[in-house]
Image (tube, rainbow over all chains, first blue to last red; front, side, top):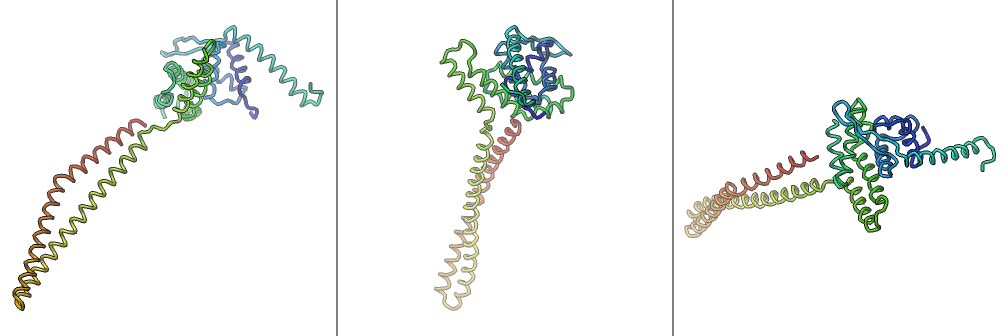
Length: 105
Length: 201
């Protein structure tokens, strides 16, 4: 897709995917890639940062004789998700306003 | 590239990061590649270990640089410095290779210089021997016409021959003792260096 996802939009999508259920690295990446054209290797730093900001927390479960690290949305993460979602709605409205030729506020 | 190779290279690139950052990143990509199913395909999509390491270090740098909540400004400054070093170190070339190349070049030119001196001394001794033989022959012929002059010339020729012969013997002795063992020592040290580098990269 032509619209690049950086910063807040990427955070929003990662938080939104975890809001639908705890996810491990690969599944989380695939979930975000459904909407955004991000490279696989940009995902880890984002997840790591959200983790240090305490928006995500991790826990390990055994899987196939190895470890699998799951990411879970925290309360603070949920609040950030709500705030970013509201901003996204606002952003969408303003872009649509320009596209549909109405009076863009 | 296998998963093992990818992860090893990644770990090496990240060496300047804090231990827990390295372990977290490496185990993340270990899991990620296993979960992807097709190992080779997943590794190809991730990009080179260098690129992946660069992104991790830059991300960690932003995190460390910010210092987290409640970090003092001193801690932040120290953290920012660590972070900058970590990012730079990802892209730093190992210093061993250029160093080994210049050492090898220096050793090679030393050997070449020694060899040149050796060869020219050899040429001197050959010239003395040949010149000596010629003078001795011409001198003995000249003795038929002018005995004293002929004797002097052939004597001079014998002296030249003797000097050339001594020089040749000395060179042969040096070759046996010095040059061969020196060349062998230099050769094995270069080979050792090369092997070490091959293991590292």
